[in-house]
Length: 417
Image 1 (cartoon, rainbow, N blue to C red):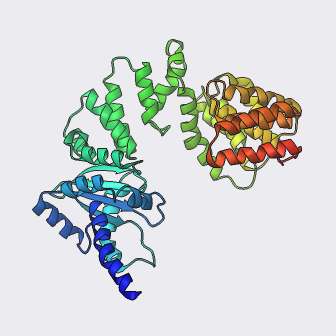
Image 2: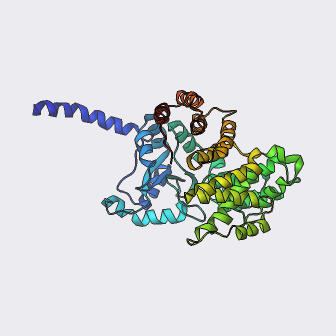
Image 3: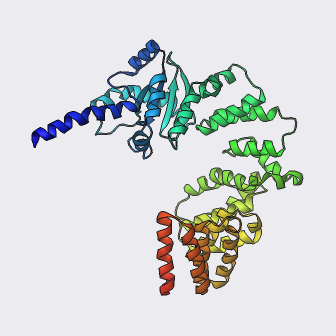
């Protein structure tokens, strides 16, 4: 028996080694300085996979993308590949510990530099001379996307840091600035994104065009930034507002995050002074103050599990702003009303919002909300029909959830609080 096992191992081990060699080869046993020296000697770029032990996506890439043969062929020919752990844990082995100092320097210089918040995975690319040239944040969905990103990292026109150097050296044409703004935004360097966007907008002969407002909306995430003024102005310009779609919602989101939600986090257990909050916002953003405060109240009371106040503010919001609500907002408000409201007149109103939410796209989740509202309104036959329709359009765990709800409906159970 032992001889048979040894014989099997003799045949299996070479094949296992071959399978391992087909994917990416990652360097081991070398310091960062030695990696750079080796890259220069072999005239290869350096690919650095920055990860943390708490990253859920990183192991999936290591298991599903890095071992693929086509990935290995490209990456091993063009790059020296290195994995660098960004955090420190008691379980770290000796190789990880030897990299502590280098990892901290890489983290400080590139992963958490300026306003980049340091998301993982982060991919860094260095030239054969050891100069940083490119960076991407977030996992690739598949091997083809990963290889496309790495091929772009070899092209100076698509390398983020190469473009930043051009910007610092005075390149300011509008095509370049627009591209740089989007590149910087994608990887979290908002300072560069804002600077490039502002430089781009100052060169526009007509600032308040749909294209420019859309660009400002995409780049801006901070109400202190001047581009917020462009967005506010667009709301007061009737000839373009219908073309913009979503500017108001984006402005409410941005200002709410920075001006209102941040303030609410500092409030103690006493109730917020809503009048004071609205007055403060109105002084700076008069066009959206009331809408923003209503949305904030909905979120606040929902988090506090105060269903009556949450629904009351939803009704007030929908009465004034419901005609512009997008499908996701309609479904969210309808769902909250189903879960937290006992007043049948509000249930009837929520049915109308819910039906609007899937008028153009029959998303199973939105149809499920509608079915639940019908059931709570006492319209059991209609509820069963719509829940079955939602179930038939769904897949996986979502489908199972709707099957469970359907059975509860058939039995006449009450399954909400």
